Image 1 (tube, rainbow, N blue to C red):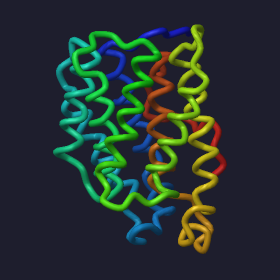
Image 2 (image 1 turned 180 degrees about the horizontal axis):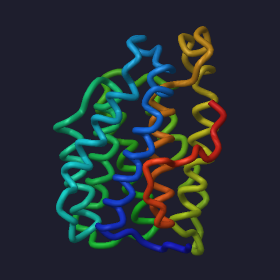
Image 3 (image 1 turned 60 degrees about the horizontal axis):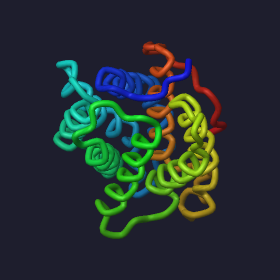
Image 4 (image 1 turned 180 degrees about the vertical axis):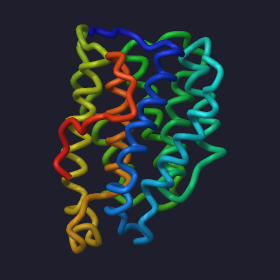
Length: 217
């Protein structure tokens, strides 16, 4: 596959598949949860949040901007916990970056992802590095720096996934509580599962049983 742009139907499929991917890994994400409170619900909160976005996508959107708007609004209304709020704001930023866009090429999509970085950081009064914020920001920067005239959406998500994993592995170096517990950040891990599902949808692989594709956490 060599997908060069994303329309409303494809983005909706990507978000739905991202939710399905996370759904299968809720327990794994919960088990990593030690920050900010070790209450073991990060996976549940992130899934309930993105699933609210899926519900809002019941009607097939006409454009990528409309798909992003519907999903983001659903997530904002359904956000649970700190991780869910941050996830919803990531997608709110993406929606802002895609506002009025019928179909997004790789560069346009990346700019929307950058908007997600800005929105998510602004949503937290005191951003903490070593969390989902860091993991998402690092990956977006890395993938964006590697865009060329021949970059497809598949390649973009490969680069994004590569740095999501690398950044997640670095989170214990940034946050003492993670290092002491011997775990990586739960929110960052949850986002990786979402990104894996979104990437699979690019190749038409819509399934509730996605295999993990590369992180060793």
